[in-house]
Length: 227
Image 1 (cartoon, one colour):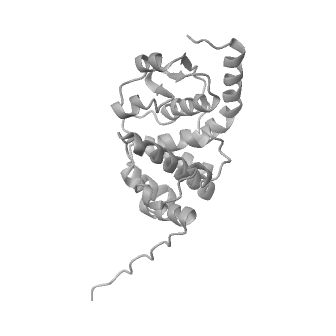
Image 2: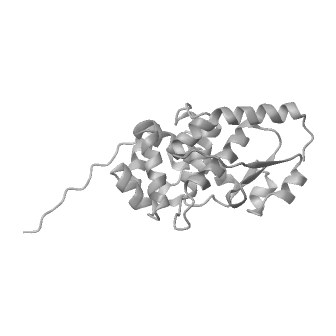
Image 3: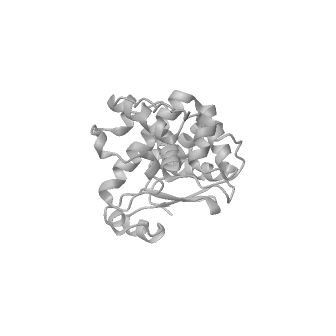
C-alpha cells in the first residue's frame, strides 16, 4: 500500500531487475523465487510495519527497510531504488545461505547489501563518505551485530560496506561466493575466512586499515622453535 504512482514503482523494480544478474552471480545462485515488497508511506506506518530494534534507531528513523527472508518479503519506507536493492540483496543472501547451521555476521550480510545498494563499482574509500578517522571504526571481528546506539549505526554500515568492497575488489567475486558456500556448511566466519582467503579475519582488517588509512600492516611474529 503506497501513495506513489505505478510508474514510480515500476521504475524502481526495473532498476532492481537490471542488477539481479550481478547479484545472483556473486551469491552463486540462479534465483527463481518470487519476492514481495511492501511499500509504506510515513514514519508512522514504518513504526507499525518494521520490527522492534532499538529505541535510538526508531527515534532517528534510521532504517529505511527490513527484509524477512523466511517470508521472501521486505518492507520499504518510500520509493527508493537504492534501499530497494539493499533489501533485495538481503533476501538473496538468505537464499544463498539457507542452512540453519550457518552463522553469518552482520558485517558480511549488511556489507554485501551496501555493496550492491550504492553500486558495486564504488570504491571502498567512497563508501566511508566523510569519515576519515580510523579510530572511529571497530575491529571487523567485533561487528557481528548491528549496534544499538544511533551514533554507532552509521559507522557500522560505512565500514561493513567498505570492508566487503575491498574484499571483492582485492580477491574477486568468486572468492566471496566461495566464502558464502563455506558458511553454508556451518563453518564459522573465522575458520571460513582462513580456509577461503588463506589469511585471518584480523589480517584482512589490517589490509583494510592499510588501504584506507595507510596504517602499516604488522609483521608476523617469528616462530621460535624450541630446542
